[in-house]
Image (cartoon, rainbow, N blue to C red):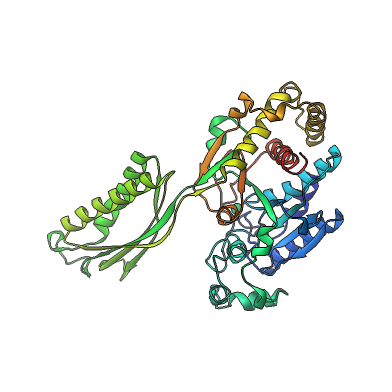
Length: 445
Ligand SMILES: [Zn+2]
């Protein structure tokens, strides 16, 4: 299967041998190599390659001007020492799904494109989804031009150095108007599919999430000479608040994390004057998130008062829930549900090698194509799990503007943004098959 060849080509690019993780930061050499790979893949397939005004890459089958296009893809950049799958799995699967559809003899009635959105992770300039935000008009050129990396290099300078014109950045409504559906396949960033025993799932929504800054202010003093009773030590209520966050999140079936902390004066032998902690919290719905955040703040105020410490809490960012398009999600459920039902005998004999698996998929599709079973919602459709996610994606940015859906591929470790992120070969192949079925259902009705 072409998936394995493409995967092997990308695997060494930007890999840090010390950690085994990837450092494919936007507009660096590794990113440029990934982008060259994308262009090669497009051209090798005879697809029309283009780079849009925001340097996102597109590979077109059919005429984009015809409108109502079906687009699939993801991103190729990474977080510091990220895993191999977050992003590239969606791009590689997109090309592989296209190959499979061509092998099936699919006749496309809508234009189809594979996309690589630039700078999704925001690892270098601190803002995620820059390529899709610019395209959707959620980030202005002026704002983008002010982004600066840790070495003081601005985004426009970095883009120019990588051979892209930063002056063209900006919203691209005409492009979005031509897209009828965007489907992003992504490795799952969690263990829901592992726990349910399913290789592939469909996204329902991106959880609402936010960041809050907690400033606990006490009094700096000597760690050796200050009696315990005389201290106003902000570390104590902070520590209790961290535990409260864990407790409140558990009660609301949400997540809450203090992952960053700054201490002043930050001396081993000094009672701190200030402990500043950043809370990141996410939940399936707004009500649960409110319950967690309110509960943590209430507890923190009690702890602060008990220790004679002042507390201020400031919300630094907030993103409301992103619901993926219900009609498109139901369509995906129907397509994959039908497939589960019609290919159940075939999949029971599925071999583990990629070639065998894709052949099985192709034959089962050919067998069911004449039947009109897709017009009804098959009860088996319920077997494709629909799950929410706490992570942001380009698909979440675009969802406000165009019908958008996501497929998740099982990640047995549940870990992401780390070299421990994983997916088995069989599950990757299952993801390609699912994506191919979805694209066929949407673009070859
Ligand atoms: Zn990603």
